[in-house]
Length: 288
Image 1: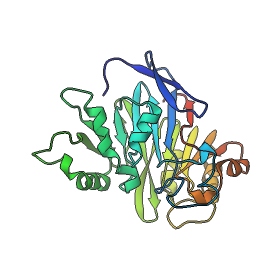
Image 2 (image 1 turned 135 degrees about the vertical axis):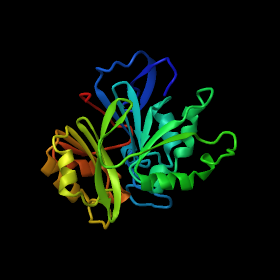
Image 3 (image 1 turned 180 degrees about the horizontal axis):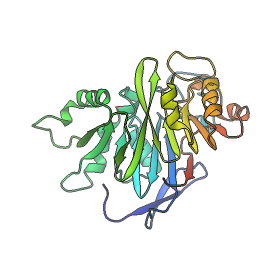
């Protein structure tokens, strides 16, 4: 869903933030993935924290809440819509979306959805934003945004078109998406595979049959909270173990806590094909 005038995304700064210039997006362009946020539920820096990471002058140590933008086959698909969504959309120059995929119902992944109304209100009448998620997540969306689903709506509320997904592959605007179920302690969370790109956040364990869906991935994005083990998130060593098993060409870690240590120092100790992601990082890979 977007106005007829199409635009392509090009790098705008050395940090990989994006700006739009006029031009056409062809279906043969590479898939492009932008990290809009790479931090935990508190972000980095954490309010009131005076640790070296939170006080770091390195812009790569500044992390908004996790989200990525996937551009493929001329479509723009957002994964997760946390509390920093407005800032992320403005910073990346995003003026239209075709769909939103939600991984799970925690607030750092859905609480920014009210700001999706800006995309709807570019049209007259307003167009609903397609939202794809499993039923527990959609129940949370209906509860949190109950004002958007009332029969007698207040003017200006967001407009959502909810699509219930299960564990089978599904189509989003002609793009195949394969759900990958992981466990966030005991909570099921969905990762998503699109062609050679797999995005997984908030995982602690992945069943073998779900991990099989990830095999053959070119680029794997995986959560890694910190070096020390955590009860509901993968640690850095646990995430590295999955990377070693899957063997992607490249891997990036996201959902990173200030307890991980500095971006630069942590990356120095990682294998050549694995790096901490940072906000604004962009990579490309062949379209599916």
